[in-house]
Structures are given as structure tokens and as C-alpha cells.
Length: 180
Image 1: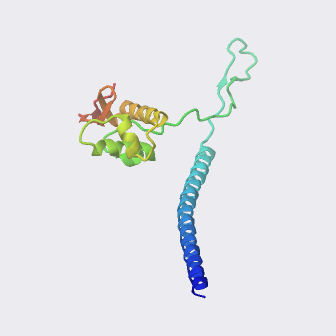
Image 2 (image 1 turned 45 degrees about the vertical axis):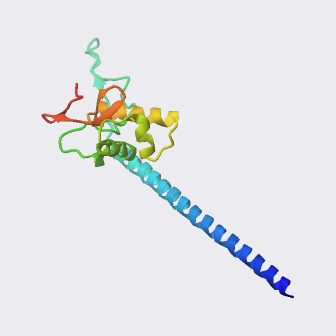
Image 3 (image 1 turned 180 degrees about the horizontal axis):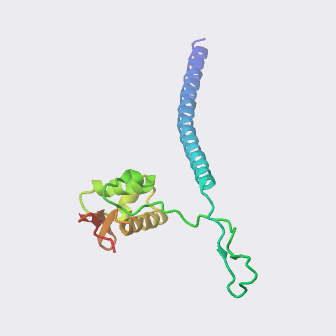
């Protein structure tokens, strides 16, 4: 009879191990689910905020031009653009640096990049920044990060004295050394 109890104990131990493994998977999936919910909530809030801002924008008054060739008509001629719906063509997500501005005004990934560059002992390359901001070291991610670095240089947040090497901006007289 001893072998039957031993077999049951072995099966119980295996079942216990499987339960522990599944509990660990559930915990990991719960963390992933929470992160996904947070991302969804941020996107919902962003969409609602943009909708509110656009709803509050007062459309410009229609442009009116008087037809000078027919002064006797006395009636204004409405411009071809009058009443045209205003569309936001682009939004400046990375503002130009100004005195008193901190990295907190930047979008998340740009803020992370500026912080990584600031913490580096010297100039850094895009491929050194990518893993430090939590991205996989892949050509596409490196090139995307390089584009963001170039944008930060254009807007006065970073310096690029040597092509491909990025450092914190040295401010001279309140203006960026990269200002044109």
C-alpha cells in the first residue's frame, strides 16, 4: 500500500507545482492587463481633451470682400474660403526651448530621451539611448529615436556638435546654441 500513497503524494506535488505556475502566469497577465488599461485610459482622456479644445475653438468670421468692379451692386461678395471648416494641420508636440522650461513640458518619450542624455557622462549616440528608454535595439527603433534626437536639437533641447553624437544643450545668453 505504500506505493499508492507515494504515487498520490507525487501527483499532489505535481498539481501544486502546476497551480503555482498558473498563479504566476495570472499575476503576470494581471500586470499586463493593468498597463493596457492605463494606456487605454490615457488615449481616451487625450481624445476627449482634443475634442474639447477643438469644440471651444471659435471659427474665424467669414472673409468678406467688396467687388470694386461693380460698386453699384453694393452687396459684399463672400470669399471662396468663407465658411470653410478649420482643420488643425499639425500640432507642435515638441516646443522650442525657452528659458525656464523644463523637460516636463515634453511628451513622454522625448522627456525620457532628454533625461537619458542629461544623465550620460558625455555625448551619446541614438543606439545607446534606445535600450535606456526601454526599446528593443532594432534598426527601426534606432532610426526613430535618431529622428526624435534631431527634432530635439532643432528645437534647442539638445546639441549635436559632432554628427550622430547628442549632448545636453549648452545655453548661451538664454538661447540655444542651435538656434538659427
